Structures are given as structure tokens and as C-alpha cells.
Length: 206
Image 1 (cartoon, rainbow, N blue to C red):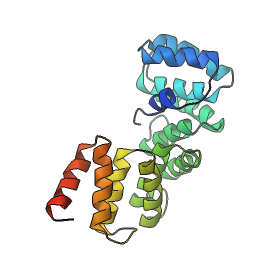
Image 2 (image 1 turned 45 degrees about the vertical axis):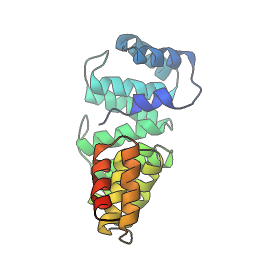
Image 3 (image 1 turned 30 degrees about the vertical axis):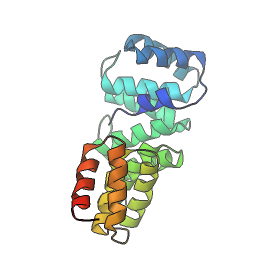
Image 4 (image 1 turned 135 degrees about the vertical axis):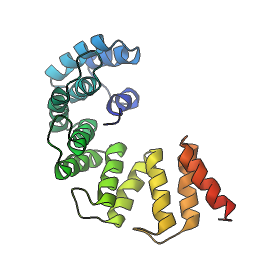
């Protein structure tokens, strides 16, 4: 599971309760034990974002002993509470079989919930499931659809993936100019492979 949930919670513009705000500020200063305490208070108080924070801390062993099963427990609470980032984390746990038996269909289920909840990371991961035929029948058109949502949400890795789909003509009509555009978007977002693929196509005259 990539470390995205807490990072996203630090930047999105939601209004939180006092416990979550204290936890978030503590996390920003790497005071993980204090963050854990206040995320727990927020989660126990019914704040789903607090449960996501707890799940992430348990996953990475920050402020508490690493425990994938506890991470699963709190991310499930968050997702059940309608918190999209928690659903993404839950999908990752099912995908990698951490704290729970590996199950691509369950991963798909929770990543779809995450994407429907407007989490770009969840959309991107859903796109890769479609592209790889994991938990769902392989479908490059659907892969393109969800990867584009993620790229539009400024997720550089997914912009690169869209570039390759255009380059190879999978799920979309082959278009090297479009491929170059998406590689360029990834490059602008700071992803080196995007810059490299952009330069390759540029050298070929596209």
C-alpha cells in the first residue's frame, strides 16, 4: 500500500473536528504517538477521516507497532463511513494480501467505491485492475477511462499509463501525439519516466 491516505488528508480542503485537526498537525511534525492518540479519539467519535489516519499509522508502524490486521480494521471502519481514502487503503490491502487474504475481486470492489468517492488514487488503481484483468475481465477501454480520471486528478503515474495506452493503441485509437501529451503531463508533475518517454517521441518527430 502506497503512503497516500494521510498525505491526501493533509492537503484536501475539508473541515474536520478538533481531534482530527490536532492529529493532523501532530502527524505533519512527525509526532506520531500524539497523532495516534488524536486520530483514535476522532475515530471513536465517529469521524471516518480519523479512522483512515489510524489505519495508515498501523500500516506503517508509526506511533504504534505495525499491524496489518489493525490497519484493515480501521480502514474498513473509514470506508464503511463513506471515506474514499479509506476505501483505497482497503483495496490495497486486499490486492497485496496484507492483513487479509489476497482477493482481487474484493480489491476491485473497494477501489470502485474509492473512485466513486472522487479519490483519484483509487481511480488509477482501478484502471490498472482493468488493464491487468485482475478481479475483473480485462478491458483496456475501462482501464483508459479510470486511468484518465486519475491523471486528471494530477496523478503522474497514471498520466504515463495513459501515454502508453495511446502509444500502443490499447483501449483507444493509437495516437502518438496524444501519447506525447500525456507523457508531457507526467513530466510536468515531476515524474522522470514521463520526461524520458516524451523525449523519445519528440525525437521521432511527434
